[in-house]
Picture (spheres, rainbow, N blue to C red):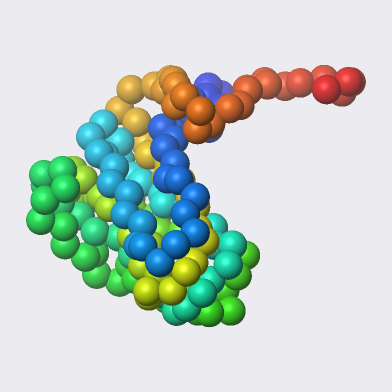
Length: 143
């Protein structure tokens, strides 16, 4: 039987701050050492039509190019909806996730999971962003 690590030790987490504004949100991640990236976002109040999409590039914060087919429309009635874009085997080292708000005040937040690490276990030490525990085969009782 293959040994399986808890998901929290096989993925690297990073989040992007909650924002209620008209400004688009762009999150960039370095995929070096990972075989894929899953971006997830949650909208609270959608003020106007927008979208979420992914981009790739070779150098951090330079030369971003949209990834074909990754744009998902966010409609004005998508309050409390979640969206994700999963990119296994990215072609370039850096990926960006863009929440385009269409110029309207929209509230959103989210995070990304880098997965398929070339080395594990992964230690997620993201101060003040994620707090959690791992419990392997816990028994019933008081929490």
